[in-house]
Amino acid sequence: MTAAIEALAGFRASIGADRVITDAATCALYSQDVYRRGTPALAVLQPQDRSEVIAIVQSARASRTALHVRGGGMSYTDAYLPIDGHSAIVDLTGLKRIRSLSTLDLTVTAESGCTWAELDTALAPHGLRAKFWGPMSGARATLGGGMSQGAATFGSARHGTSASAALGFEVVLGTGETLDTARLGHSEREAFFRPYGPDLTGLFTGDAGALGIKTAVTLQLEPRPAVRDSVSFAFDSFEALATTAAAVARRGLATEMFGLETALARLAAGDAALAQDLGMLWQVVRAQHGIGAALKQLLRMARGGRRFLSGSTYIGHFLCEAHDSRRLALDLQELRTMAAEHGREVANSMAAVVQAQPFPAPMVVGPAGRRLLPLHVILPHSAAAAFHADFIALRDREAAHCAAHRVCVFVVFAAVGPSALLYEPVIYWEDEWLPLHAATLPTELQSVLKPGVANPEGREYVERLRLTIVELMRQHAGAHLQIGRAYPYLQDRSPAFRSLLRQLKNEVDPLNLINPGALGLPP
Image 1 (cartoon, one colour):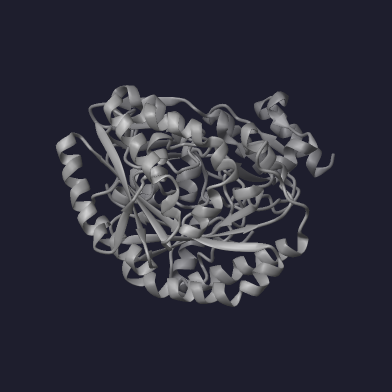
Image 2 (cartoon, one colour):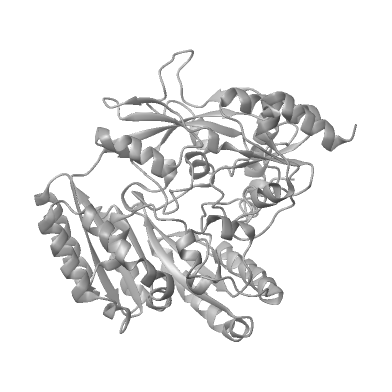
């Protein structure tokens, strides 16, 4: 019996043949991410509960089969891509149950395959939400993926990344054992207090799935705000935008802050955006508290239109929430005063749409159907200007190569807690789509956005440019989310740091079967 046949037989015995998918098209689809293809796995395994995850790990140990854990598939950092053929994809989207909810203690325990959007919908009738309540891709991105890779967007300006909401994890280790990182003793009580002794929960946040398979997550909740609004400002320089973002973050005036180069907004303002305008307007109307607020917001958007896309270099969007109208009005007034020192207020069209529809259908391709690759670095506010200057110089040096290969690069920004700015260069290029793009992009957008022709030389240039940008980020000592295999997590660490992490990996996964190669650990 060959190794592959033995492995598949073991998995079928563990969870049933109907949930061991081996057709070539499915295995290839699940073995790629937004950026590129991995080596096609032997099978896609679809467990439905923790006991089946344990059975999969035990079977993988017997057959020495690597397991690559996949949530919503929205990674672009090789986070779950198989690196050899003797591997299986573990699709956790079948683990969706909300196990417990305490409206008094403000905690919820949900299985890791639940999406952020599904959890938010379930919490809404209770007037609650997670402190960090999801990335923009939350319609597909899962709790387990968000905790393993790290995520930012909703709640990030005030609370930080997804890790800030984690109280505890249930993790199936590579030994087949189950670890509860914060539950006390043999109690049935879920995690409720994270900083009790050494922070084991923290060890498993942002681990790129290398330290075990998360099967459930306990999150800290907060009351949902009663009112919300947003403002947008145009800025003539990055320094003006960054200075405003830092000031607003220090005061905690916004729950979310994001910005972008106006050139990117202009590029995205056509094709698919036009096709979605009416639907987006309807979402904005539905999201307002009362017909008067809805009409006021529509008037602001109608007056502003897209005129703000000309005559400025950067746009910043500030999303605000409060538990009463008076508090919201005071925060908005203070925010406007701060932002007006460096920019000018413009129509808040994009901000209003994001507040009204926080989890849109995933845009896995860019304007006009271009392929896209987001990169990012997280820097303290004090270091952002220096990095920006070096990045713009790099982009200027690469301009001729970008033009030759039909590549363009723009920058997006977001606030992450009071101390840091997320700086995100996004590379767009003309190329054919992967099957994942066609399988993920909504049908109505596929009628507007079309794939390009194969551009292998452009694709190779994008990879070289990616490595150049990542090296620049390393030189500026930046941090990252979604480490996967794309960022040099261990490169500049001390020998003691590297040794401790490798010993930890060996302890929880002695056969190196769970997502081998992630975090820069040996494959």
